[in-house]
Image (tube, rainbow over all chains, first blue to last red; front, side, top):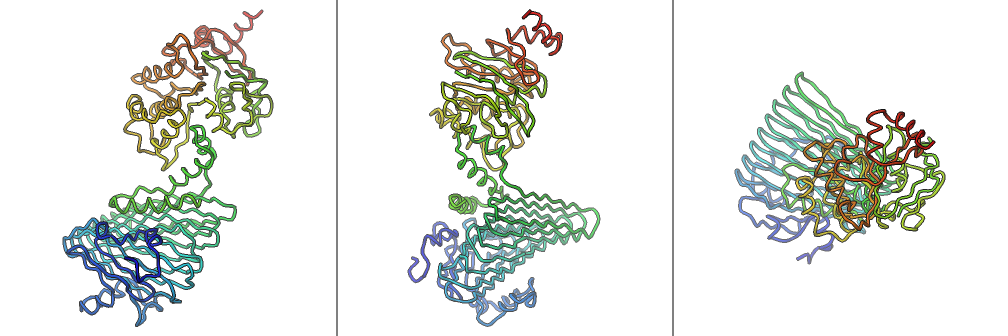
Length: 361
Length: 246
């Protein structure tokens, strides 16, 4: 089935792309600026290229640049071009699909892959999306991915992004989400392989009684620079946000950011950044920020960076593990985040990605 | 089974144990008493090979092998194990994962669930080891791990502290079985550190010793020593011990 791609199935699987109608409700694959495969296996879920969506629906243009600004920075400006492509994924009102939609963005020959994605979970719908972004080993260039998420009233969207690039790729995602009343937005980000640079700061605007959850697991290997964080703006009473990151530096440089802004009374947010340095050359900066603009709200954070505690290694060795086994169990445990509300199938994909990585640590 | 010869140990550059000598035969259990900070935990940690406890003099011989410089996992494979007073909480490492390693040492894999049930830890199997466990749960989890390891030489650091009355007999019986106390022809041996001595109501010991100021100061019948400590405190007990010697 992967004929026609310059990408092997193994690499796709690594970022959660199965190409199996039994395991996915839809598939979307884009190589450089061309869409290679679009298929939907589930009624009520629409998946197409953003170009086709613009042709099909007059209103799609109203969603374009609605949350993000075209002139936010040089990368959004560059993405705002004629030849932009990307995916349009939409769950129709009250449609609940547990089986995830898979989308792959693959960079091969383009100097710059420009993507603009629109994701809409209509009122009362439930949608799970797995996005795998990867590159050909020979690729040299940049990926600019603009994504705008609309989680409408009473809807739930789980979005999991797995990155597996190569060391000559620079990655600049620009994402934002609107989470309407009583809605839930869960965003997971996994980066385990080498990359030249990842820089992003996705933002959620969270309205009345809705919640946003961001989880990231980031491993920066030698030569990788990762500057990544999540931001939640709590706009109305009852809005909650939880931002959790686990970062591991094995020689790479990581800046782990996080920001929760309370713009209304009666909101609640918690931020947790934990980092582990596993190499002499490692470098982690954790920058948690809490901003309160009204009284009667509750924002908290917790940040810690360290190395693996010798006491923990010793304890596991006293139960028969070798030193290497103990270190590996502790690192794996560190990366394991309990993600509330995540469907089992996405959890398995995340676990598998972490499992595959284990040997490299 | 275990011979400790002139052992001196430092923790963070401070000498804690001074020329400690100990000999424990197959089938024997030693109850180790002593005030806080006297070096009881240090002795057990040094025997199991905790790198935070630096051996600066002497040797440890276990089953005729000099283990003084062996890493902990190799000591464990020779057949010793220790339950800790305050084991670390390890986020993301589940109790069941730790138990699987324990069971691997003895080939007891099929007993994991049965023994977890017995020690009332079945609900905790999928939880991070020791994270959010109550004092009693930590002790039951420690003993459960040892039961699956089934070591020949068992070291228990205050297995009764924090255990409520309801569970003390459960823990006590499990330890008694670990040490084969009810058997005529015992092959197991061990050391139990106990502060209050509650555990000795359930586990018999062959000898008692007081560790005082980093030295073995008194050896005798464990119940006598415990009675003396209860009546006259450690100092009083040591004074009597000295008198008896003269």
